[in-house]
Image (cartoon, rainbow, N blue to C red; front, side):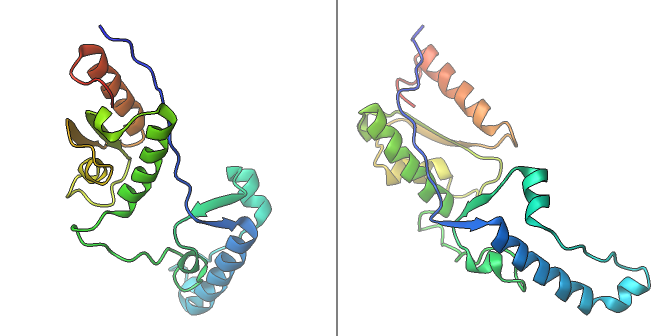
Length: 179
């Protein structure tokens, strides 16, 4: 059996940040608009009135003070409250794969390895942006990893733990040298 070690890790951090203050201002504007637009249905008991939030509520309930995001304007728009992300065709790298490639480059550098040293790519996520092409294959191609296998793993909240176990077992059994 072969020894298993994690010799390098990488991290991707989204380029924009939203603090609770900004989020609360936008959300509360949305709440006021929703309640005004639905006043009749709320009065008739058909819809529940939305309550405004506060920075204190978010920090106490979640412990979050800031969050990193890929796109800020759409999230803070009270008419939208979600990112405005441009769809990418299957011929282009998906946004999730782009994130994984950046983290993968960091991991390769930290481990002092080249793409040619890697023979298994596993991408684990609880939600995939798209299922075809496989994100792992996108990452494998973008990092110029020319040998071995690549596959996605989606096991809900346990995706990362399952992927680590799968990679560890692949190295232990000798079916992969470096994942």
